[in-house]
Amino acid sequence: MKKILVTGALGQIGSELVAKLRHLYGNDHVIATDVRNTGHEITRSGPFETLDVTDDKAMFEVAKRYQVDTMIHLAALLSATAEEKPLLAWNLNMGGLVNALEVSRELGCQFFTPSSIGAFGPTTPKDHTPQDTIQRPTTMYGVNKVSGELLCDYYFHKYGLDTRGIRFPGLISYATPPGGGTTDYAVEIYYDAVSQGRYASFIDKGTYMDMMYMPDALDAVVQLMEADPAKLVHRNAFNITAMSVDPEAIAASIRKVIPAFALEYQVDPKRQAIAESWPNFIDASAAASEWGFKAKYDLDGMTRDMLSQISSKEM
Ligand code: AKB
Image (cartoon, rainbow, N blue to C red; front, side, top):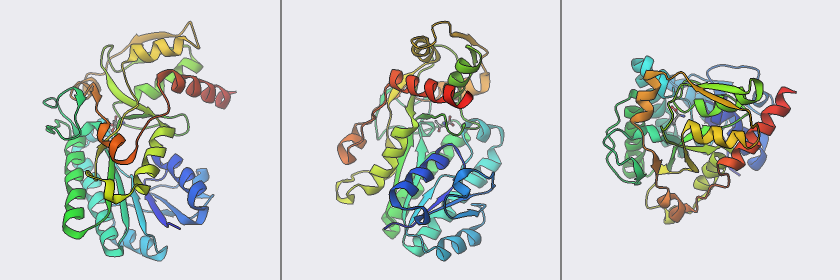
C-alpha cells in the first residue's frame, strides 16, 4: 500500500485530493502537510504536519519519519498572486519544487506535481494547443510552470525518478475556494448565482479558457499515478481539459437552473491580460492515448452539481 505525503494539502486541490486518497489508500497512508493549520477536517482525519515547503530539512524529516514512498507536491502561488509578488513566487514555487524533488530522490519516491495551462503564452497556438508546442509564457507563474516541467523531466532522465504531472486547466469546485488564480471567476460565478442571483465577472466576455470539474481532476491524478510507466511517452505536464468556456457560456448554463441569473462585467485588466496570454482550448489526446484520460463532467453536468451542492451548503 502506498504511503503518500501531500504538500499544500489545505488548498483547493489538496483538501479534496487528500480526502480521496485517504478513502482509496487508508487514512494513515496519506500525510497531509500545509504551512498553516486551519483546523480543516483533513487535519483530523489522518496524519497532519505543519510544513513550509521552502524548509528542505523539515520536509526531509517529515517524509523520512513517515517513510513515504510517494510525494504529491501541490504547494504553490497561483497566477494572479504570483504576478503581484513575482520574487516570492519564484522562491516558493521553484524552491518548494526542487526541495520536494530532492527529498523524493533521496527517499526513492514516486513524484507528482501539477503544471497548468499557464505554462503556455501568447505565441503558443491558441486552439487545439498541442501537447508539445511553443512555451514562452509572459507571467511569473508560467515561467515557474515551464521551469518546473523541465526540472521534473530532468529528474526523470538524470536520476530515474518516477516523476509524473498534469497541466491543469481552471479547476471548479464547491468544497474549498481557490485563491489568487485567473480562472477563479468560474468558481465565484456559481457562489454569487446562488447567493445573489447575479455576478460581476473580472474576466471579459469572449475570453475562452479550459476548465474542469474537481472530481475529474482528482480522478486524473490517481489514474496517472497508477498508470503503467511503459505506456508513458510523456511523463510530466500532460494537457488535460473537460471544456472550453467564457463567462457567457457559464452564465447560459446557470440560466438553465436559475433563469433570472444576471451577468455583468467589471473586468480586471491584470487578470484579463493573463487570461488573454493563455490558450482557448488545449488538445488532451496524449493523456487520452497514454493513460486513458477522459473527463466525465461537461459544462451543464458541472453546473447542475455545483449549484445544488452550494445551495445545500448555504441552507
Ligand atoms: C490559475 O488561474 O492561476 C490556476 C491555473 C489555471 O493554473 N487556476
